[in-house]
Length: 324
Image (cartoon, rainbow, N blue to C red):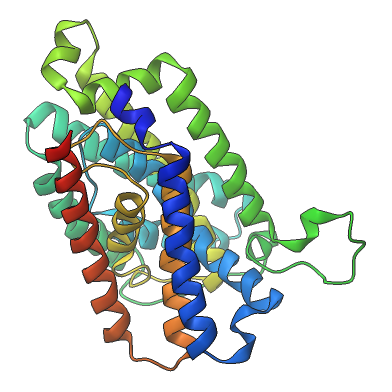
C-alpha cells in the first residue's frame, strides 16, 4: 500500500504539471497563436475525453498487474453497436446501454480468458485486439454506419458560448464533466473500498494476496469488466465525436492510453498507480497531439513522439523499481 500512495504525492503530481508546462511552452512558442486560446483549450478538453475515460479502466488493470491491448478495437466496436441500434430506430438510451454492455462484454471475455486459461494478459488481449477489430468490421460489413441524429451526438459538442460566467458547467460539454465525475468515483473506489485495496494487493504480490484470502480470480475478472465498461463509455464519446459507427476508428488508441497511465506514475509491474496522474498523462498526450497538428507535422512524427514517451516512461519505471 505504501508504494501505491507514493505515486499520489504532491512531488509526483507537481512533476507531471511541470512536464506539461514545458511541453505547453514549447508549442506556445512554435505553434500558431491560437494554440493558447480558450477555444483551443476547450477543443483539447473534448479531444482528451476519449483517452481520459479509457485510462480510468486501464489504470485499474495496470495496478492489478495486467494490461489490455484491445482498448482501441473495443472502442471501434462500441461505435458500430451504437450506430447500428440507432439506424434500426431504437431509442438513444437503448443504444447507449447497448454500447456500454458491449464494452463490458469484451472486458468479461478478456477477464475469463486470463483467469480461466491462466494465460498472461499481454497474449490474451493481443488476440482479442484482432478478434474485436474483426468483429467490428464484420458487424459493420466493412463500412461506416450512418445513423439518425440524436442527443448522443451532443455529448462532446461545445455548449453555446453565450452564458453567464457563474454557469461554469457550460464551459465544457457533458462528456468532459462525465469524465470528471467518473474519475472521482474510481479514485474513491481505489482508496476507500475493499475492492480497491484488493486490486492493489493483487498487483503488489498476487501470491501473498491469495494467501491472505483475496479472491484473486474474481478481482481480476471484475477489473477487466469494469475497464470494459469505461471502454464502452469511451466508445460512446468516440461515436459522439464522429456521429457514425466506424470499425476502423480508434486505431492505436490503446498505446495512447497505456502511455498516459504509465506517464501518470503507474508501474507495469503492478501495485502502483494514480487516477489523477493518469488524467494528467492523458492531458499531456492530448497537448502533444494538438500541438503537432497545429504545427502541421505529419502523423508519423506524433507516433514517434508517443513511442519515445512510452520507452522513457517504462525506463523511469524500471529505475524507480530498482531504487525501491
